[in-house]
Length: 363
Image (cartoon, rainbow, N blue to C red; front, side, top):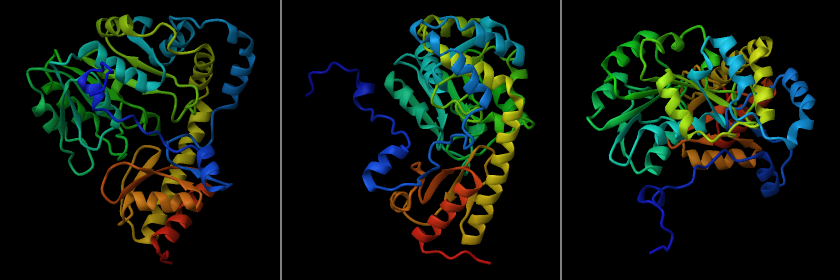
């Protein structure tokens, strides 16, 4: 028996395994020209305007950031139309997901989430020793009707994602509204929109915030905005919900350079438009490549795609590593997740995949 007095939920946890970094693979295998398509990063990096904004603020490193995040909240207000008292800032959206659980769920409560959903939902639920209710997926998608039916008297929180990670699947506004109408008013619904920028024309979640005070919309600037290294996220919710979140939020959880970068990133609409174009072209390139190799894939509205390699995912992952390509096994039988890269990166991945699987592309 360990002497460490950890709660029972944490003692059963296994640490979250991030995607393998390029530097580690270089050390392990002595490879160069490595392609990392494991962590759903923007292959363009970040906007040049972000780099300029951060460089201009380097002299401020010695000072604490604004604990209230005024400059970033002001930009979010300008862009999305929500007052400061409806905004919660996070050190990436992972920080926010944990905050939601800590604010509203106790060990006697339950949390509902879908099978094949983001791994952090299960991790934060277990960390607070709450009851996990994992609802079977509908194919690779959220079964919203079943999720609503799974809510119990002790359910305090429901996690849903649109698009979903790691499957890339999505639901439409009508499906979401039908779901929300079935959720009791005292159950908090977290709508995780880490990838929403890749399909903004299809779903306007923000219009539901006034109608449903129990709704939280969570977003990140790590993906389409290209700020993964700086860790910035934000949540939009009712004034009352936001008040509770900010009672437990660490006052300096978003650093100054990250906030400066986020403001610049949110303003640069041209960069976002270009990122969408690169993603759309890359998605089409991978879909065509999978078809040529005779592989099935799950249609995606994110910046990654789940492909059925018809083989052991771990073996495929390790084989690709030896070819200098990093992807992500996600615990789904015979499938791996691959992020959309540049045209050259996608081409290298497809070539390496064919080699590892012993396949030949059809003309």
